[in-house]
Image (cartoon, rainbow, N blue to C red; front, side, top):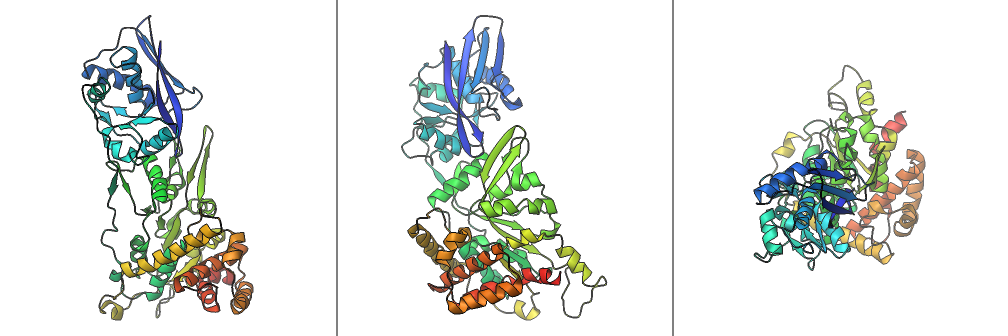
Amino acid sequence: MIQRVATVAFEGVEARPVDVQVHVAAGLPAFTIVGLPDKAVTEAKERVRAALIASGLALPARRITVNLAPADLPKEGSHYDLPIALGLMAAIGAIPSDALNGFTVVGELGLDGSIASVAGVLPAAIGANARGHGLICPAACGAEAAWASPEMEILAPSSLIQLANHVTGRQVLARPDPRLRDARSGGLDLRDVKGQETAKRALEVAAAGGHNLLYVGPPGSGKSMLAQRLPSILPPLVPGEMLAVSMIASVAGNIEDGALIDRRPFRAPHHSASMAAMVGGGLKARPGEVSLAHLGVLFLDELPEFSAQVLDSLRQPLESGEVMIARANNRVSYPARFQLVAAMNPCKCGRAGEPGYTCKRGPRCAEEYQARLSGPFLDRIDIHLEVPAVSAADLVLPAPAEGSAEVAARVAAARALQRERYAALGRPDIATNAEATGTLLDEVARPDAAGAALLRDAADAMRLSARGYHRVLKVARTLADLSGAETLGRAHLAEALAYRALADRPRAAA
């Protein structure tokens, strides 16, 4: 007789069903796992053997074969331990053979019979619920799985003995409750930033429309300080967005104690990050920083210090909102709809353009430093802003009256307006102006006569590309939303064009 247990294999954030087939037959004692297992799955037999012995059971002296079907799908990870162990327990009569019917099982076993947490429980739970299954998962992941559906049956034992007692009626496991982790911005507030009113305005515009932003300025001007306070003015995730973000975090193993987060992710990788770390990949095609920042912010400090190859790899996800990781034996797609915020010095020494300072290398210092960034990459950044050094007069002033709470209220109002607009146009999948496509943009961002004339003249003078032209319209639409205007006026387009002037300067110099 063959005992079957349902589990999953992960392809990106998707959980594909896997059938664990356990066969115990007469013959020389052996324990074999087949079905394209990786090293972690192959080692499961030793963990299962020790866990069963610690739970008071012994493997029979027979030939045990475990098949993970479909056999042509690679199986990776330690979450196959628990389904293999439960299949064996049912095969030898330790638990009823029908006790696992209608359940999907994931979990890693300790040598003492305990069930340890694993990555990917949330997508596994959502996939099981779509198939009409319940879920058996580690106790540490029960709160995470409970978000999949309030009606779904979930068993979250902490050990094999606890689960065996439940299915045999000697103990009843309560359904875990979903938990939400408080992820405030750590007390960071825009009120901490003195001066830099123009930079604060640009940060508000970027937050309201989901636009990409680049700060250029000398060291100590507050570029990183401003970027780190961006999460404090962003609206919290809506339920659908929270599940999308949490599924990626679950696959990456970044969910702590099963509690989900309702704040938008803020990722700030070091400039030594490799391409695999940034866009994803590696041996198991794990999600990279761009996917972990999905529906949130990716902050790149010291932008020219990143590898040119790494920066140019961001061009495709910045446009499409997803990243495709293609390998010889694997092809995985991850969502990557992130907002890019970057900061850089104007030159290697950081003092280019400073009054009264003359660089020994002359203008070549700044030109060579900024030339590390490719034109196509810079063209995908909506707002380019020069941040001057903060003067002593600014530092001695009292803290500004307006902080993150006031700015966040305006940002939330603008984003609510955008959601309503695009939902009315039959595009509920678009949440911000930065996501609007060219055809849709022509409908929602039509300038008036004065604004159209200004835009036409500026596009010729600045030699805007088609992408740059549309990004100016997107920023102008956000500026109009912040001011409560229906149409794009000359003032909105003038400010949006001013945010492109810095990007046009190197091109004009060339």
